[in-house]
Length: 260
Image (cartoon, rainbow, N blue to C red; front, side, top):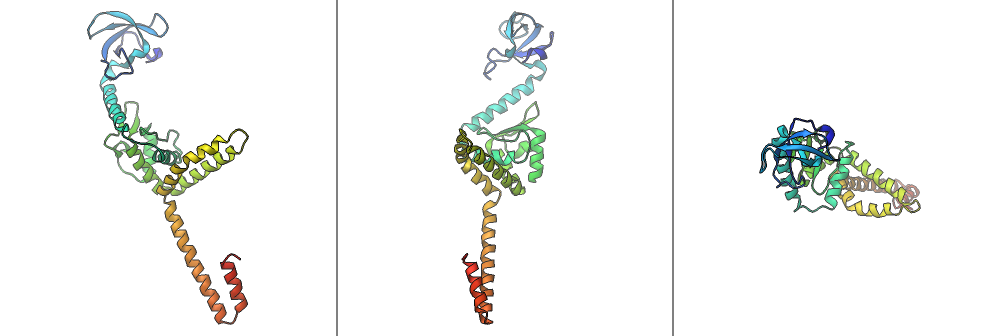
């Protein structure tokens, strides 16, 4: 913890190695905020040496003792997420989820291979717009809200959210991707900035997947059907003109239909 948030006389959870969750959490009392830079004086209340006073690094003071239960609960849930993420492959799916959620306009929106981590209110805004009901952390059995008020979901939960949002607001997603592509394409033509085009090529599989989730392929299919229907009407009109003796008009109509 930062020294500014530590209060003398209060109890805290101390961990010899703050990066290791298997390192025991010991109860200590903050005796004094003095000593060498980055150190404070504590007294151990339990563990192998109760009553011992010594200087420890502030980063080894990991949580107020009163918050230890929720702290340990969060650690356990994070550990489950991290273990789950080891078997998840990223690639285009991660890019698709990231771009779709970014298109929502929420400032913290995005995703990584490990999943999604965002403030609860932002995720709630996206789930509401996506037409999903219930708490967002319930999008996956491993989802949870930590003690800071952030939602954490594995990649499968983030994908479910992204798919629902893309289906609910396809134009939002498609316009965002088009703008993104245009910006990177334009930047890549500047001298010394060709790497933007390389990045754009790397992102294309994710963009294609995001467009698919937004129903772009269905729109193209419907558009092609409509074009076919209109071509049939024009052909019928040309036939009717011929039948009425307006051969020149019929030929002009057929040439226009063939793009000549």
